[in-house]
Image 1 (cartoon, one colour):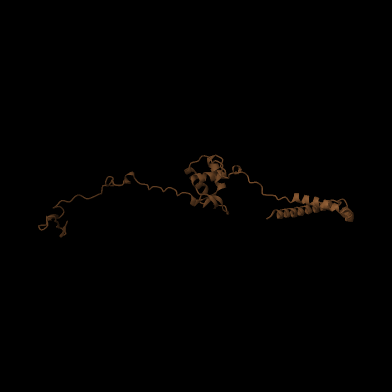
Image 2 (cartoon, helix red, strand yellow):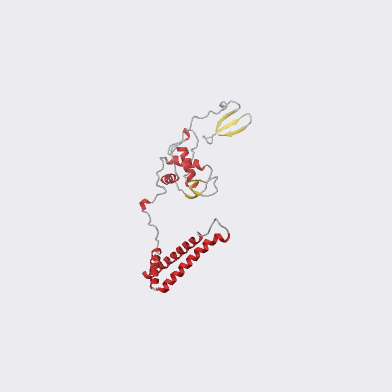
Amino acid sequence: MTALQRAAERLVAGCEQLARRAADRAVAWVRRGRRTDLTCWQAELGVWLRIAVLAGLAALLWRIIRATPVILWVIVALLLLAAWRLGRPVGPPPAPAAAALPKADAEDPPALAVADLIRLVREAMGTGPGVHTTALATHLTQTTGEKWSPAAVRAALSEAGIEHGPGARMSGVSYPSGGVRRTALPDPSPTPPVGAVGDVVSAGRPATTGAATPTATGPELQPGERGFECVDDPDRPTRTHVLWKREEVNRSC
């Protein structure tokens, strides 16, 4: 866009504003002529009188211009000057310096261990799928006795490496909001199996067993007692035959 085009647009915009202001002021001045203490046509008499005054001024101005045309150039010059001033483009407000911009999470959170923070987040969640930041700030304030704001909660979650953001849902609340989802929390530590200390075996070492539980057994039988005897096998010296005399059953062992 050339400089001439910009100047023309500025004059057009200024003329629109100048005409709008003049019309608004004239209408407001005419409306103030209405009497509220009268009724019917007497109340509107002041309005018509002011309209007549404006019409008379316009007719007088027109007669002056007809009599002295040079005055028209003066009027046009004054109108263009006013339009030029009113048509000045209004740019966007200057952006504040980066250092002056407030940071949402610039507040330092109270001191709290990561494990305690995770535990309190789980308490605030309960059995729900997550917890909102505002509800978590309230829970931390009540449990720790220190003032927690949503900004401090977000800063603490960021320092602890816990993912948080919009779209978290909470039990008892129908709408999602910024907060922590249950899936963002680390899995709780598994509970070790309950057992005796002696049951734990180190790698590379044989398992140790406790004292053997005595088992109730009958008296040891001797050969020749209760109708049996042991006879060596002549063909295989490592085999012994047990001969049960009463039942007449032979068993090798």
